Image (cartoon, rainbow, N blue to C red):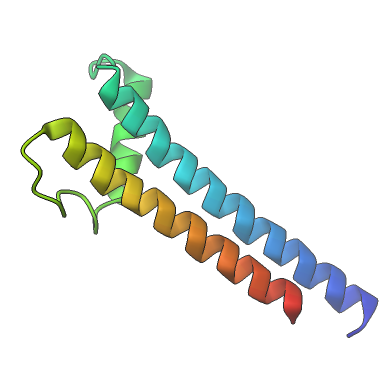
Length: 97
């Protein structure tokens, strides 16, 4: 592999990993805000909630625990873990090729 192609591949892998980290951070931030009873009337809290809800749309309310906090941690936490694992797996694959 040429040095230029290797550099581009490495940069793409870094970008994928950073994006996965940012997505997981947003989801974890929402879980913390929810657990700490953040003021939902606050614009920042509402923005984080909206983005996290969109990112975890596929896993939101996936679990039916009796406790609300457990549903939030499981649903949004699962999405965060999936984004991290998938993103870093893809980044690793990019680095190898």
